[in-house]
Image (cartoon, rainbow over all chains, first blue to last red; front, side, top):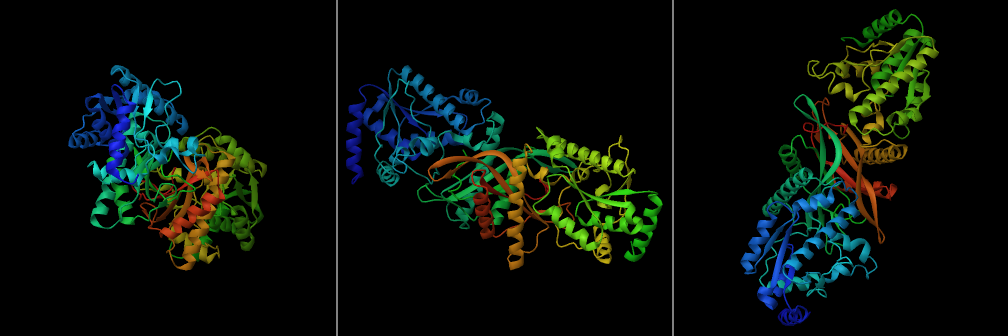
Length: 315
Length: 315
């Protein structure tokens, strides 16, 4: 893409071509899907229906933040409540790959129903090149597809429309600037949401714990960035582990789970290094987490593993 | 205890009084039990039978190290092989409290058999005051007994003989100096051994992973202490967690478990702080662990939680 303005015009024309009637648009709050939603709105107007699926696996305040962004952009947004459905699909599942499959399938079923309701089979999605190319395509079905929600199953009635399919991240950013889509230092967030940050069984209670822990990590790291004590990392988050670790409260032994704090730097997410976070910051995070989640979390652990051999997310 | 030499003479006299025939002596390699074994040897000579139970849960090189210490002291030592028995007792057990109960019971049964074989019911043990007093005795059955092997069950045929029962740690150290018992910067090590550093199921394979990880942490921390980059911490070790975390090897996704590195400072083990370990040290430990245990361990985590709210050990 040499010229964002020209790409925008071409993309709008292609969208009109590909979508004869209405279309639903998968919105996540991420820059890619938001740019796709703005282009679809420009191309299709009222025929475009951006949907944010509330999986119950989103971060604290995330639905409200996405709604605010769309309001600013003048693009309508419908929030589809589906928390019970996703938690139901994940009931009893601990295998990370199976979690992603179930979440992917549930997303597709929700989108199919929403498409049916609007009399269409077109789903506009903000897929970009790195989502489907990874190391020459060989890893397509192994690494990268798992970082997102996965493809549309072959038995789906939906037809994907992907206006950003050939773009790389810096090109999307240039386009976002042209379209006034705010990026607001939003970190990458996995399609399956907090489910992949809840190692082991995914229950409403464990998701709530992971949500609180993630909010604390984000707040404390953001505060350190603002104070100038930490350069902005690529990604920072928390993972809940299904362990039983002993702690003490007064004179009593209590058992709780452990929260991992992960802070990494990366250029392209293909490799990453664990950031050397100042000890006072870690101490503050550990204190807040064990206090806010007393009786539930007795340990806070800092992940010191690079990618490779680890990955950025845990599942 | 005002005078170690006088305490020694009195203890020898009391031991002769308490043990009319033979006695077995529980040796662990720790300073307390080694001092007790030396005193029992002085008092009883050939009637004293120090036993090191090889639970299969000891650290790398530990049996050889204890044997060497006893050889230097001129005190005979019998190693009782019991790894299969302990692993059998732990089969399928994940609850930390139940692990300790099973280990304690297995210890007692092994000691009972060894006592029977020698025609005695006397077990000399290096219990010291902090082992049974904790915060005025109220916590006796909750916190501290779980740190050691637990008491002798009421249905046991053994009679405990505890020559150091009224001493505190500094008094034991003074006595050890008099008796030429080397301490060699040996860290506290829990009675149940690596079982409490294998969170979740205890299998031979997972114990072997925990053993390797503990050896790496000890070596790297010892190297840093020798190099003067880290003051000697109170305790430093590794814990294996029963999680499934994704990593990458070449182009493949692999799932492995996680190893926690715990390094704490303490004065009396009643409270403890997570040491601010230099990032290069953590990075070196993470690299060695993930390389040595490739395919088994994909994550290395540094425990940043103080006691309270955590404890020093994990179980």
